[in-house]
Length: 412
Image 1: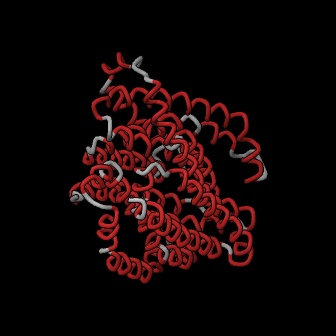
Image 2 (image 1 turned 90 degrees about the vertical axis):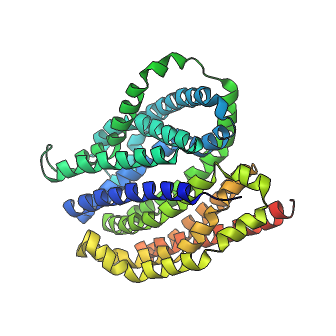
C-alpha cells in the first residue's frame, strides 16, 4: 500500500490554515476581553461545543467509513444522514432549551448568560450540517474541496470577529463574539445548499438501512468522541469549580496552542480513515504500524523544539497576561508524541469494528482525568489539569498498542 502524501498534505494544509485563522480569532478575542471575561467566553463556547458534538452522534467518522465502501449510493446516503441530523439537532435544541438553565446557574451562579446561550442554540443546526458536508467530502476523498470549506469557514469567522474588534459592528461584548463564533458556519451551509437547490427533489430518498449502518457504528464513536470531548472540557469546568475564571482562561490558552498540534493528529486520521480498508487488503497491519513508527524521531524532535519555544510563542501571541499558560502548554506538548501515535490506531479499530473498545478506553481515561483533577487542581490549578491530560494520553497510547498487538495482529 502507498499512502498518498498529496492527500495527507491537502488535509494537513487545509487544517493548518483553518487552524491558524482560528488561532488569530482566539488571539483577538483574548486580547480584547479581560482575562476573567475570556474565561467566561471559553466556558460558554465549551458548553456549546458539547451540544454540537451530541448532535453529531459520532456520525462524522461512521459516515466516512460507511460511504467510502458505498460510493455508488452516495446521494441516498447523504440525504439519509442529512434528514437524521436535522431531526437529532432539533431534539438537542429542545432538550437544551428546557434543561440548560441549571447548568448555567451552576457555572456562573446567575442567569446572566442564559439569553446568549439560547440565541446560540440555533447554530447547532448549521454546525451539524457543516460537519456532514465535510465528512461527505472526506469519504469521497475530495480533499481539496474539504480544505477549501474548512478555510472558508474560518475566514468568515475571522472577518466577523475583526469587524467586532474594530467596533464596526455594534461594539465589543462577549455576546456578540459568541454569536459570530458559532453562526459563521451558517453562511457556508446556506451557500452550499442554495447552490444545490435542485437536489431538493431527492429529499424523500431516506433509507432506513443506511440509517442503521451509519448510526449503529456511530453510537460507539459518539460515546467515545463525547467522552474525549468531556475529558478536555472537564478540565475547564473543574478549574472553574475548584479554581477561578482566570485559571480557566490561562488553561484555555494552553489548549488553544495545543490544538495546533492536534490538527496533525486530525489530518492523519482523516486521511487514513477512508483508505485503511484498501490498505489492509494488500498489506499487513504490522507493516502499517512499522511505517507509522518510522517517523518517530521526527515527531520527538518537533515536540522538543515546540516545547523550548513555548514561552516566547505564548507571550508573542497572547501577551504578558497569559505568560502563565507556558508551563501547562509545555506539559501538554511533551505528551504530544503519545497522542499522535495513538491516533494511528483509531482507523484500524474502526475498520476492525472495535469502536466499542475505544469507548471503553475513553471511559477509563475520563475516570483517570477526573480523579487526578480532584487531587491536582486544588494545589496546582492549570498545571495540575495539564498533568492529568498528559497521563491520560500516555495511558491511551499504551492501551491501544497492547490491544492491537495482542488481539488484532495475533488474530491475523
